[in-house]
Length: 182
Image (cartoon, rainbow, N blue to C red; front, top):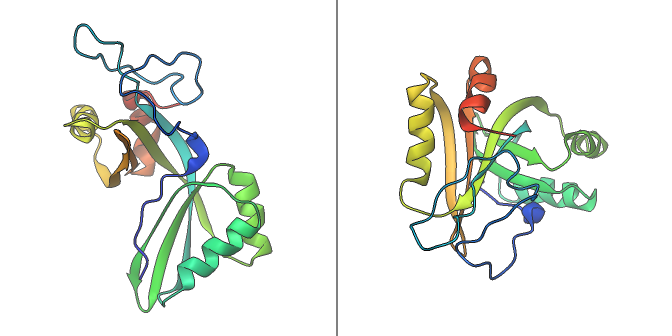
C-alpha cells in the first residue's frame, strides 16, 4: 500500500523564509488572491492556487511497487509537483501524479511502459499555514455551489502548507474562477 502527499521542490521555497513577506512578480503567486496580515506587519504571502494536469496509473498493490515507479520516473528526469497513492481494490493501487511538465511526464511514462489515464484537472494550493486556510477555500467553493470530490492537505513545514483539491470535471472552470487559480 502506498499513501503520501509529496510537495515537490518545484516551488523552490527558501529554507528560512520569514512568515510575512510581500512577493511581487513571483510565478508562484501571480494571479493569486492576497491575504492580509494583521495591522503593523507586512502583507502575508498570498496562497498560490494552480490548476494543473494530473494522471492516474493502476499498479499492483504490493510492497515496493510505488518506489519502483517513482524511481523510474526520476531516472527519466521527471519532476512531480505532487503525488498520491492509495489501494483501489482487487490487489491494485492507484497512483496519481501531478507533473511539473505534463508532456515530458507522458513521454517518460510511455518509455517506462506505465499505462496512464488522464490528464484530468487538479488544483494545487500552497500558502502560509494558518488556522482555517483550507476551510476558507472550501467555503468559497460551497458558496458557489461547487462540491469538492477529494482533498489532500498537509503542513509543508516552515509555516507553509500544501494541498491538492479535486472537483467534478463539469465544475473545473467555475472552480478555477472562484479560487482565482492560474
